[in-house]
Amino acid sequence: MPVLLYRIDDRLVHGQVVIGWGKPMGIGLIVLVDDTVVESEWEQELYRMGMPPEIALECCSLSQAVARAGAWRVDARKSIVLTAEVATMVALCRAIASVERIVLGGLHHKPGRSARLPYVYLTDDELRLLDGLAAEGVKIEAQDLPTSAPIPLSALR
Amino acid sequence: MSEAARGVVIAHGGLAAALVEAAERIGGAGEGLIAVSNEECGREEIAARIAAAAGTGSAVLFVDMPCGSCFFAAMHFARGREQVRVVTGVNLPMLLDFMNHPTLPPAESALRATAKGTEAIRHP
Image (cartoon, rainbow over all chains, first blue to last red; front, side):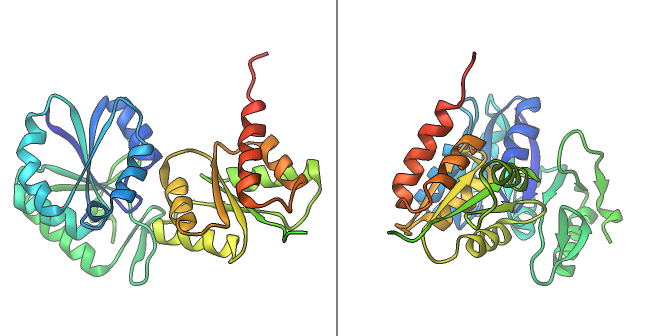
């Protein structure tokens, strides 16, 4: 099965991901790519506690994700790949070169970021990174839920 | 007499504020319950809101679901803090019980809240 969704969301695994996207898409695997989470067994266990029994959670670092990407594509389960940071997703996409679309699902206020949508705040550097990836042919859209209309990256300025 | 613990209700959207308002309408307004929403904020911001609401003393963190950003932030805050406990599946009966027993130690308060909240779920 292909990876159905590559999503950047600084809350990582939460209700919108598991219930909003996971249930209607019939997701069987959520992959969380985060170098910090992968170092903490406690944190991984916390995220696992929130998963429904029909969805497995795999936590990996960026380098592990690059190595595992081929396996997810041939996995029998439909999957979602999540990162909290724009830079992590951009690096992953460049490394595996098979991602056609990225969804900005939730990037919230932090110093240096400015509002692009109520649920998307980006720094100028993050926007530049995304623009670079879009120029390489990856479609990038903001969309918090599958029932919301996708908003193209070009509208987030 | 122990110091009163704070009750922090942490939930999606406007649920926490609505629960606190409803609890205070029934049990009387006081300083015991504080609402925290995760509305339009990332992990750091939710954590900051919880820290501000819970303070440095005893607290019970009442969370809407046993997963999601509210739960993760509450668990992070409670980690390593003996005087802070987390209860999930917040409902009105557990909040009313908490308001009626403000000086119980948080661990005991959390156990009572779990029992009262569970007891209130029925199928008559």
